[in-house]
Length: 220
Image (cartoon, rainbow, N blue to C red; front, side, top):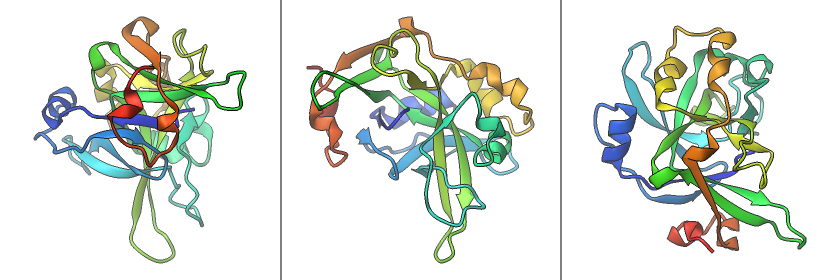
C-alpha cells in the first residue's frame, strides 16, 4: 500500500525529467494524503503532447454511484478488475513524486514511519491510472490511483507492498494511448531496484496529514 508521499522538487527539474512543454509552478508537498490533489502527467487528448494536471487521489470509476475512491490498485490484477480495467487500457498517467512513506509494525501500539526515496533525492513517477467521474450534482471530478507491487528488499522489512516506480525509459510506453493490451504493459510493473533507493525512519509528526512541512522528512 502507498498512503502518503511527497513532491518537493522544483518545477524546472520536473519539466526536464518528464519532457513537459514548460516548467510548472509547484508547491512544496511533504505529506500528500488520500483525497488531496496530486500532480500527474498524461497525454493531452488526441495529441501526443504531455500535459501536467491536478487529480484527486482516490480513483472513482466513471460508472460509480458514490464518491468512494481507491487510492491504490494491485498491479498484478488491475487490468482485470472492473474498477480499473478501462483506465488500465485507456487512461494511464505518471504520478509525480520524490519520496513515499510506509509504516512498520513495532512492539508498541504505534507504527514507526519510514521515508523512502531514490538516491540523491531524484524525482520519479508512480505508475498511475485516472478516471473521470460525473457526480449526480456538481462538476466532473478527475481522480487517480497508484499501482502497487511486491516490496523490494529495502521496503520489505517495513511493508510487504510498495508503489510501482517506473524507470524513465518506461514513460513513453506507459503513456502511449495506442498501447492497450495488458500483456504489453505488465512487464513494466516491477519492484524498483533496492540499490537505487534509500530509507530512514522519521518522526510520528507525519502521521497527521495536517502536518505538511520539512519536519515530516527529517531523519530520526
